[in-house]
Amino acid sequence: MRVLVDLGAQLDLPALGRSLERQRLSKRERRARVVAALERGAAESQARLRRFLEEARREGSIRSWQGFAIVDRLLVVATPEGVEALARRPEVVAVIPETEQEVPALAQYDLPAPGPPEKTSWAIAALGAPEAWRRGFDGSGIVVGAIDSGASARHEQMAAGFRGGVASWYDPAEGSATPHDNRTGHGTGTLSCAVGRNTAGVTLGVAPGAQWIACAGLPTGRYNNVLVTQCADWMLRTGQPDVLLAAWVLPDPGCDRSLQPIVDAWRAAEILPVFAAGNHGPAARTDRSPANYTGLFPGGRDALSIGGIDLTGSRLTEASRGPGSCGGSVFPFLVAPAEDLVAAFPIGPDVYRRARGTSFAAGLTAGAAALLMQARPDASIAEIEDALRASAADLGAPGPDGDFGYGRLDVPGALEKLTRSARPAAPAPGHRAPGRTSARSDRSRR
Image (cartoon, rainbow, N blue to C red; front, side, top):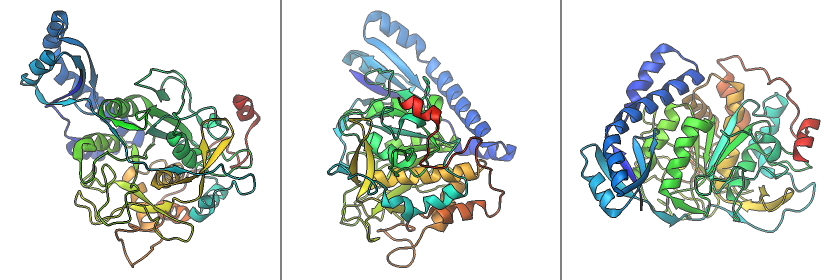
């Protein structure tokens, strides 16, 4: 049997954050310091168990183990007797069996999207992304990661944006070396809304210049706590994206804090997680974790959870509503288009589907965050969130509420808020207008 074994030496992230803030380090330097501190603490803690683990392996009660650093945790393959012996160790605070549960659907695909010009997603103009592109910001230099069903690097919207190399794709279940997606296409579709290259007459990606990486943490469309831990640790230590798309929720309703230490570690390392709010409405208090987390690093922040609106600007009927079960008064954080969208589908290099759900709204928001990060490379994830919140277009009743959160995502407004007190970055070298591909990109797809 496989179990997750939590040890007691967890890093004090708030104290580390305060220390790093006083040193005035760059984002990259802060990320390196946080990862190093987590790795150092986990290695020292887990070393205390090594003699026991090696003896148990020789005796046959433990077959193997793998250490993580994002939290002080081991993945152990052992007999029931080996698990019982582990649980009695003073270093161990919890033994968590491997579980796999159905994840509530966050997405719907309808009939294939029609041909041009209808293949331009209405969400792109609604969010104001073209204005950012005209200013030279298309996400170049930013990496968006996704933990999902996988992602296709063969699709025409995705091929040129894949970062490539061993640090850009991880498949803990099957060990495949090539990025791929399962039959649901959920990972490819949501990620295409963030970083689709807007090629072949199809415009659907908010940050077409950004690169992407992915980990197949939900390869069957089911939530597995072991696979998600493996992906979470890989994202922090190896992939290290700037934005991390987590367009899924935990299986059970209410407030489940089990992933909060992982989310805090990402945020401490200046990786911005973007969560789908879920599709469990229309009733109030239909939020789920981790989108409903509160008290996050730094300073007790709310998760960047994204609800959905339709073409009329009304709340998507099935979008989850607040208030949040984890104590937050505002849930979701923002809303974005979530109906009649165009998304890449991985059964072929040029197949598209109409898409619906807060997963795709989260993908659009991840792309928007990439634009802001390009415009202000020095901005912390807290500053990115503040700009998104302060610029959101209020919908529904005046002020934040449980239907629309702080309002609809507004890309130009967020750019204005973020760059008002700082000099914007110049477009990355080799910038090209969205919707155009270079000869090199064309060759890579062929």
